[in-house]
Image (cartoon, rainbow, N blue to C red; front, top):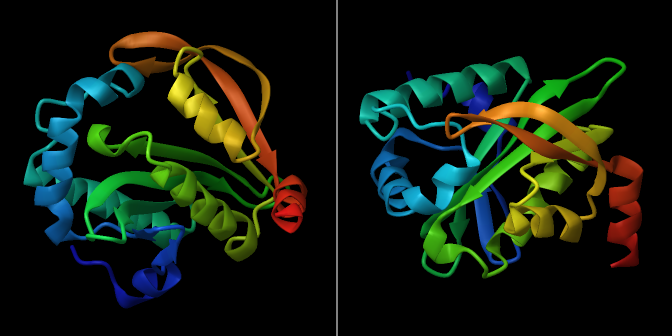
Length: 198
């Protein structure tokens, strides 16, 4: 099921800081699956348990259909992250569970391939995703949940201006175990103030 033109136009590529974010496509499967497999031990401690067919092409097509439906409904925008120098896929970032009305909020999630971690690429991708969420989607609040001992993820969030708001007990089932998470949030006005200060 291809992305219809109106979905593609609603989710343009975003570029800056040495990275480009764009919606995933069918042809990305091979590179995505290879990066995920190569990074499996690095990613599994922080993610829901991978289904047996998680890296299969059929599962990738189902994933794209879900992304397509969420984008069309205005409830989620998923992007792959590419480094600009060689055009290689390095990770993914999404703005999901978008709520309109009185909330105007969403949740942000992200992952990075192991060999690209620690190079500042996620920080650059986060900056683009935040601008998309606050400036294009006109959201008021972004939330992120992070396992307390995931130091890398905490650093990404705090460097982007997110503030820790509390502890969510037994919040998500990660790698087969219910885990506590720290709740982080960033408000549009705080983001704009940081941006204006440079």
